[in-house]
Amino acid sequence: MKTELDAPACPPDCHTCSLRKTEAFVQFSQEKIDYIQAFRSATMELAGGRQIIAEHKSSTRIFTLYQGWAFRYKTLSDGRRQILNFLVAGDLIGLQEEFVDGATPGVEALTNVTLCVFPRDGLWQMFRDHPQLGYDVTWLASREESLVDEGLLTAGRRTALERVAMLLVHLYRRAERVGLASNGSIAFPFSQQHIADALGLSLVHTNKTLRRLSRLGLHTLEEGRLVMHDPRGLENISDYYERPLRKVPLI
Amino acid sequence: MKTELDAPACPPDCHTCSLRKTEAFVQFSQEKIDYIQAFRSATMELAGGRQIIAEHKSSTRIFTLYQGWAFRYKTLSDGRRQILNFLVAGDLIGLQEEFVDGATPGVEALTNVTLCVFPRDGLWQMFRDHPQLGYDVTWLASREESLVDEGLLTAGRRTALERVAMLLVHLYRRAERVGLASNGSIAFPFSQQHIADALGLSLVHTNKTLRRLSRLGLHTLEEGRLVMHDPRGLENISDYYERPLRKVPLI
DNA sequence: CGGACATTTGACAAGCTTCAAGAGAAGTGG
DNA sequence: CCACTTCTCTTGAAGCTTGTCAAATGTCCG
Image (cartoon, rainbow over all chains, first blue to last red; front, side, top):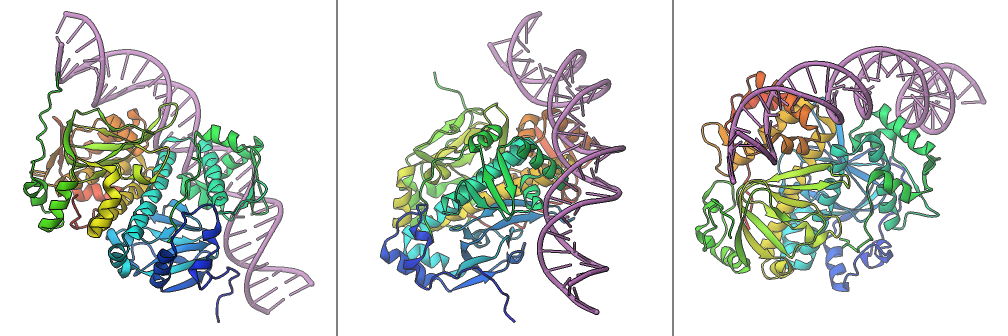
């Protein structure tokens, strides 16, 4: 019995990958795409809530998220959980496993997801055969770090209201970037527990803060969609300003 | 008028670099070290408190920290500061500037530091000429991200006591790793403000927590040195266990 | 000796967490 | 098809952790 997932599969041919058609990604040469396609060992779909990489366990695979949302997280031994960052289409998953031993974060599918799968032990060969792709991997790693940097600033130094405002803007901008926004709104599959765990807040306080924010009229959150009424207002509250988007590599 | 710094310069010849003699780093081939030395454009010393890279400003250089402590940080517009991670001998500085535009973190020398300087625009050529070094750069980037991951878990989900305990263990282990520990103690140039900014706590509460912890007899902090009396006890409090050390590349 | 800065402590306020409980939505099985 | 369970969202109340304000002490340095 196969799990029923409505997530679309990646196209078999990377040259026709629909992500590459968006504004978000650097144009790649045919040859580079050929290499990536040869490197790819499979595609797979996974239901929301399933682990893409289990915490503390090393995986032999790395992934590119093709469709859906996921998140990286760490937990303390008594169960307290911190979400480190959210992952959206185009994000590379599992790179750290290659370089960091021991306590690597877990990665969980938040919605149903579609993934491209690569063998982790082919990574070094990729650097050797195609340094440009190596450079791109570093680019993605560095960019992910900057997301975590921002998250740490948020958890460490922003108030609850600022945190929530910043999360809404941030998620909206990231979704918009890869073509997931329409009419100033995005599908919003995040539970308040996800938000709480990402921001370092309790569930209850997250709820109260979210309500306080929506009473200000800057956004609405209903029927699983986030509607942005005043992104600027949210940016001002959170002191968080999303940069003009720069194209990034897609592997 | 030249600033008087007691920091030792890097040796002119990378082959005799004293860091490479420690246990902490992967053995490099002569040829690889040759390449690094050719890539290095200068060495420099900087007094504690000076900016290595100013926040939001892009630098044209990347650095390897040879001696001393530094830290990466971000600030909010009203001045609230979050220290993202501390940097110690062997750490690479300024890689993000190559890949992330806009709001890049600042990097400040915490003590007097000695740095090896590399031209940032030679980075891509390094990947191309010497993929193994490219791979090493990715390694270091990924490893730094895992430090920030841990910091985010701390700021988001640990209590004040747990945070402080974890910071002490963490800094001790990192110093020990590169040969800076002796008799279970290390030089400890961090002010309580640094600790507060790294942990997302206020200065006053940091002080009270630090005192509470030292009253437990697990460590002492005096005359600028941190003496660890019971590292295990601190690890238990913080639920933070430093992994057995794995050698890392040194560029 | 004076000034700048880090550390320390007490008192008080506030933000956030925990506890508790109800409402609504969604899925399950008889 | 409808009770039953489960999960998420919501709200109120109480308490504790942490932040803010204020001030004293100590240290380093010119």
